[in-house]
Structure formats: structure tokens, C-alpha cells
Image (cartoon, rainbow, N blue to C red; front, side, top):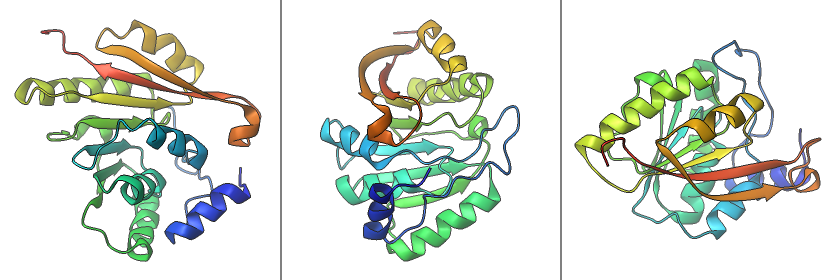
Length: 202
């Protein structure tokens, strides 16, 4: 759902991320719908993201989160997506954004990607809870090799995730940010949950 506020941010960043794309959606991998900029602004306002962080955006689509967070914080952001079509759009945006070395996009199944070195992870309903559980296994494997503070940001959870996330012992809820229908220009309200990752061995 397009709105002028998000379009203006796209213009400022010299990118195009606003149009949704559900053409490759299936039972396990969900379609592309960008996080509203107002949500990302609130996240930045918490001041928990630092320049030396490495952020992975799972299901990055056209790259909105990568470009916005890099522009505001200056940290490294890695976008992961299985869709060649969407990553072509992300690469076009990278060229218009300025070919920043701290923004990279990788085509991979989320459950196959090993996030060594990353300490912040962002999700906006990119795939099923089955895949999410496999991604958590990869994060845990990386954590055991290199113990570090890991935060996971999860926006706009569906019923599937609302039932799953409270039962996941590796995720400790730290804070929730709430957004009204008017704020996000949508028919339903939403929230951004912030979790601290904890290994079973801790």
C-alpha cells in the first residue's frame, strides 16, 4: 500500500522499494511487502543499533531496510533473499543508492545461510515458522562458535508467528513497539518485537 511518506523516503535514498510483489509467494516463502519507514525510524530511535553492528535482513526483497539503516547508522547490512527477481531490483537500488561497500545482497535460501559475524537480525514475515526454526539453528551454530550479544527484530507477526514466538526458548522478549493503523497506513495495527537470542547451553 503506497503512501507519500514512504515514497518521499525512497526519493531521499534514491531507491525504489514501495511496490509490493507476491508473484513468487508459496506455502513456505511469503511475498514482498516493505516495512514502513515510520517503523524503521522508531527502531533507529531506540539507539540500540551501532556503527560496528552487522545486520542481516532475511527476506530483504528490494533492500529498503538495508539502505535506510546504512544511511542512518553507517553499519554493514546484509540482505538475504531466495528471489532472483527481487534481488535484481535490490542491485538496481544499490547502484542508484551509491554502491556502498557496507550494503550487500546475497541470493540464498535463508535456512542455508550461515550468519557468522552478524549480531542483529531483522524479519518481516519472510517465510514459514518451519524455515524460521531452521534459521535459528544456523544463528545458534554461529553463536556457539562466536559468543556475542544477538538481537532479533521481528515486525508484524502473523497468527502463525504469534503462536510460535512465545514458545521459542531461544528468544527472550526485550521490548515491543506498537503501531496504529494510521501510522503504518494499513487496515490493521502492527508491532515490532525485539528479542535477545540465548543459546540452550547458556
